[in-house]
Length: 61
Image (cartoon, rainbow, N blue to C red):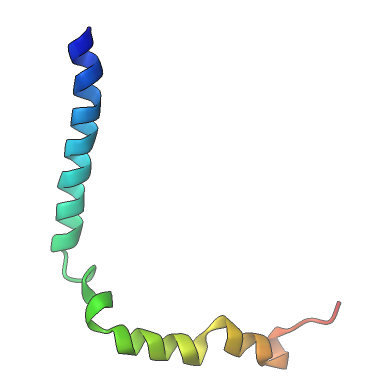
């Protein structure tokens, strides 16, 4: 019975490691690190602060 209590966390840790490695191997996951400037520029141009200053996106209470 003790082996079952040890087997469950070991299997869960193994699955987590497997899927984490599989996710990191995908090219579109690492794209955010490569295009950091592009994402920062898009954030500043289309971010929530920019839209909150636009009267089209605000509603009077």
